[in-house]
Length: 256
Image (cartoon, rainbow, N blue to C red; front, side, top):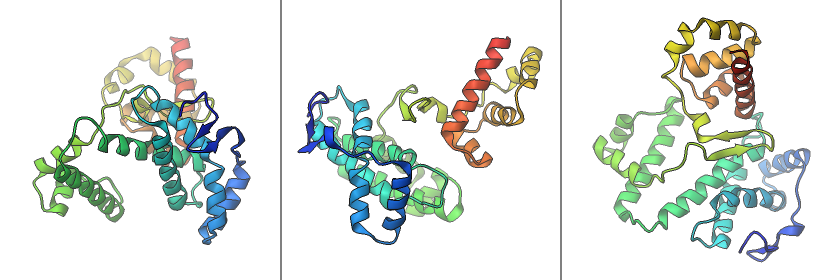
């Protein structure tokens, strides 16, 4: 399959239905009640989302039909695990799931082969991390994961590192059409505290910001929190945090 063609895996992409948010919400309600037809309709109505994610994997020596099918598995997992009680769009939740599924497939089929036992250890470590995170309501340490698995910390670290594919800090993670969240946006910054405190001109510029913008910048650059952590604490989406952060920084730069 190539993107200038109409069909992928026998699916005519020109005729794919695109669901409205209200339609998605209604179908998700039915899926929660066990309606399999609603699940199929929801999957079909989000196939263009899978196609949009596939575009970031072009240029690889991979069969795009295979990647599309893998991406569909990620979409189905997102639908099956989506919590309709959260104030989050399905697409916001599904995109990282689709990307993760495709990345796992590419790792498992990488030319640099990792031993089966090493890969199994890594996957068991990820499962242990999920169990501990649910139990402790926080991200577990490597020591805790190793203790859970009754393995040495070094063995756990080595296994997890063996399946990690390097990515660019500027690789997009999610876009809602107007604002894009990059990998670097999800990394805390703990190195700029001194400059933010000592620069009087910067303090004066910040005084012109509204309270929410000040709070976001304080949490991001003074406390070193990620955008996701800020979003959870304030009660808005990560895309909104990214938009407010970029707008506030742009105004500060203009003042300086």
